[in-house]
Length: 84
Image 1 (cartoon, rainbow, N blue to C red):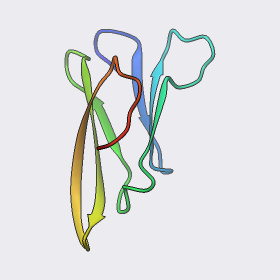
Image 2: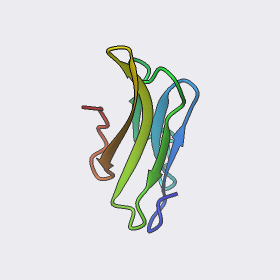
Image 3: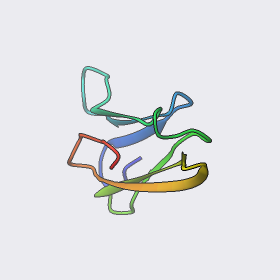
Image 4: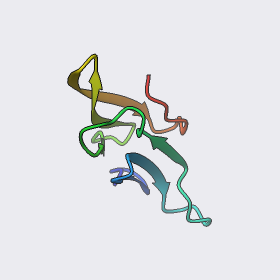
């Protein structure tokens, strides 16, 4: 849950992160981040900062046969979530 408002994040075994707003009437996520092509070893983890301005998404990926952990920060007001 986002501390100051009604946004929340969910992560899934299908390697997706979804941003939701409880005030939306259509009950669909505002944005979906699909990490399937990046994440190979574990499920993504996501959390908001204490002020609810940004959120972090962490996942592992294999780069040149080396497993690395990536942490990406996203602005909540920018609903287009695409890893760099």
